[in-house]
Length: 317
Image: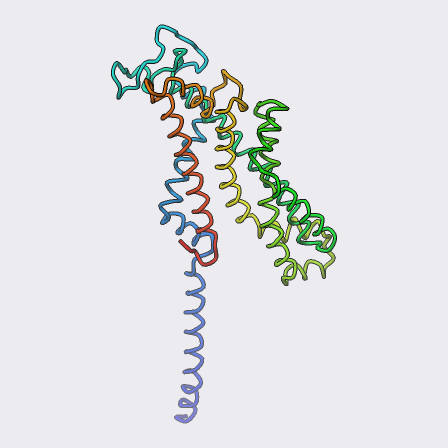
């Protein structure tokens, strides 16, 4: 009986250790953070991403609810109240915190409505470029051969064109409406998406999950849309944020030159152009919209840089 108990104890030892290890392993697996939790932690600890996203959200809310936020009608002209200084200037009042322009229009209201123009053009132009460039890049990278040669020919031809000069030419021919600016800027930036997505698609098409999808009879369209494209979205989003900032700058430059949004529609670049004749006597007419452009563009770049750090596997910062 003693020998049987000893033998049973000898067997219980390893089994007990194995069960304990299994429990510890399952406990470790249960406590291990998921990728979504890891990205959430990175986002909450990334100051650049938090600051940039906050400013962009404020700009987006201002653009959406401009009709309710703006204290005055941005088109209403009151000549007796023209060129009132902001609250920090001589004669400024809280009725017009940022003053008025040379037509007596409230500058804060025009700045808020100008946010709508910049956000719409920047986001829509970058999104259009993302759709065109990502589609072209994935098709060229997946099929290769002659298809890829045609894609690279189109990309190289586009890179040879000076973007701003082309934008000036097209806008001067077709006009400076919001739709025209979105189309022109959208078809000017697609090549950057195409280059990145083509390179990554060429790497992904040899991966095991793509081979497995091909083995079960998935169509090429399904492989591109369901297997490859989800693995490109983080890169595309980063490029989209950066190109959105560039589109806002180009729209402001075109409006400054008189080729952008036609007056009296509020636009930050147009506000700078209208205020340059009085910039030595009323500098706020130029500095206020100029600072708004600077803050929004820097914030968008900070948000894009933060998204890159958050979604990268190594979490670089």
